Image (cartoon, rainbow, N blue to C red; front, side):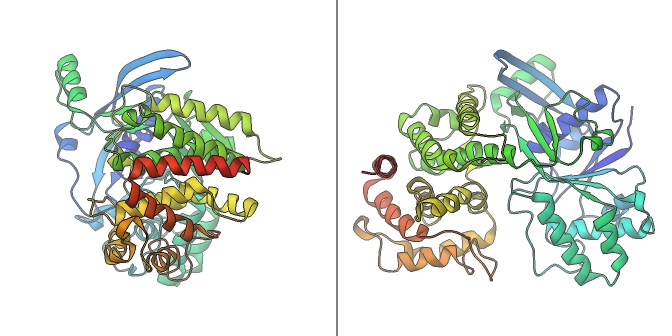
Length: 488
């Protein structure tokens, strides 16, 4: 049965295919939603030809342990009904706004997607940034339905940044104010649209040749879009559970939390799971590792994760009003390490290390700020992670990141040189500039907040990494973090 488009999805990456689209499939299978997804290309480029060849369907291969039981199954996902490329047909893109069946907008444009692009203009076809394109679409919907209150949408960004919907809303409202002389539009955005902060949790990897071969053998189908994922999943949504009537995720039996405060779940996931990923990706790649599973088999990297999380992060998670305390956080960390050990997931470090600049701000900086507030200085392991990032970004490695941070580090590579394993006289100033308003984390006005002596600590560890090598430097960092903890 062909369902009407009720969800407009910005992003066609493997995560959304194996997470949100998989959830839509589950709702439809139970007759609870009866809606399909239109997938929007958020960046220039063509969709994979595999979508057309496969009739907008793909498979999600679930492998791992869930609730103590082995899970190994393949689910067919056919919840998408059309592709929309605003770069090829902007008129067709805006036409999506006139769909009376549309209920939800969902996105995953990575942590760097929810950012302002000063060069965006209302007349662009389309605007460069995701917030700009979204503003154009919402204005078209507001105009098409003459600002009717019931034409508003649920807007659920899945980017891994704190208060993702609130930040996206602020950018859209900013565009609305500067682009359109229509106070009614701003009021409609505020009152008729529901902006839902979210937290997503599922480890998803791309396909492997072995996985494609297995599906071809079992089903006689060559699936170029197959995604491999762990069976565990969690979607936490900031809002009343009554919204499940519009998007019946929980009613479908999915692991979904509707809550007025999702920050406890976010802290656990972003800081313990994603933070651990960032550490092992940056250090692991320098040690010649290629996958998370290889890192799990390295005692040094696992000790680094435990040291960082147990000594620096977990002591700053939760609080008196939080349902999450140290026992819950330690239990979650144990679960994370178990999930990392899943032998069926070829989770590549190169993918995890992509866009590390934005990921450091989202995943590691909360620990830096909290520890600085407590101890009056930046924590050892979090500083080491920054040093590992700078080492990678100034080493000539092929980087997957936005053009601006890559260009910034390339332009300052000589300043981060460490002749003889000692940071040069310009390295300290370069690191301070990197963390400031003009650096890759800055917006021209502010940089990373609450950093304390992070720049000086990171420069020192950068010298160790370059002088001793990643392994010995990491060993020294672990020892120093433990020494500081013991007060010796």
